[in-house]
Image (tube, rainbow, N blue to C red):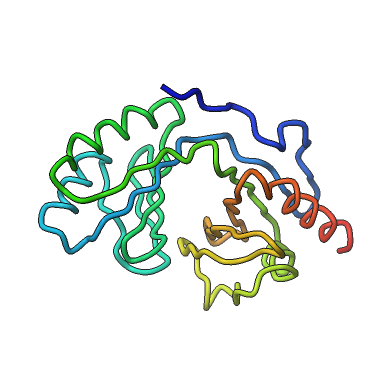
Length: 187
């Protein structure tokens, strides 16, 4: 079994506070799931394995008591779960989906999640992100894969209070953090 790192490249960064805040969220298990949702039995078996219905509409997500599943594409999802349960959930997924064409990959140590919160959070993100983040175009509960500067990210608006979770590859985490920190200082 592979050991998962329990620190990210941002382990030594302190929260940036004030009117707007930037933090690194606690590490969690992340599972990438790929399959054809039109396959017989796939959706039902995925529900059994992961305890939630996979979102089928673009840029949406689904939640259970301790998991969140993000739609990444017509045949791809990212499931967040407690870090110490990622391996067992993958095993459950492999067991339940054994006769269904699929791919399951533990990407827990591939992404970290930053939270940007505050009244200027959409404006701060707009400095490096091409999406229209106005609440009428990107409402609470929406997620989208996009760019932030030179980094690929998964952006999720977490609620009506201006707050965004930014999932970024570990190799770009410091870059995104520094970009946002600089933008926050410029306000």
